[in-house]
Length: 210
Image (cartoon, rainbow, N blue to C red; front, side, top):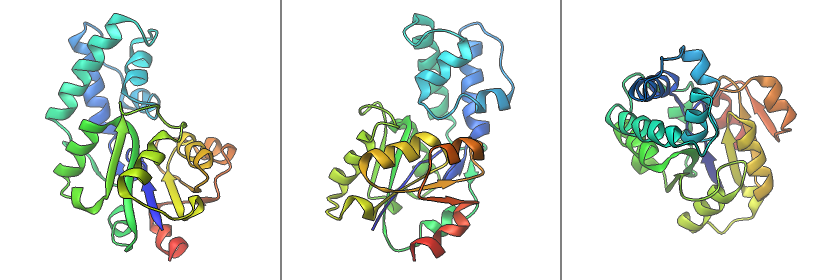
């Protein structure tokens, strides 16, 4: 069994650090900061879309590029000022299966966070945004499988995340899909994506995967 986790809202509660990085970027380009919950509503589809949403601009606007650079620079310098593990996350890392991360977060930032949390060695692969199409495209899951050398059937790959894009990416790959509540996305959106399993938190994962 290969357990592939999303990062933000699934393994970690990172909303305060994402908001801080976004607001630092907004200030850097001459805009006003936004409330944490507003920024949280922009999370899930990669840093470029987050900055475009925060700036209320199209993805290819030059100001989005400036904001994105400032966002990444700040986040790399402050990866876990406020970040903490989601309930049940640490226990999920001790399940004895091969573990990986497939996130729409920039790989450099994802690595910085996992290293700062002292858990880089827990994962056989960490694949992030910037290495190909973002979820809901299954590219990152394919990359995880290739990197780990996992040879099991697609259904023995479990895609676990808090967003509909995680569920859809898993379905496109042929994986078993697990949606976890308590992250960045409401239950209604997760149910609409029709995951194979819906958990209240990762605390329920051990009983599910055995």
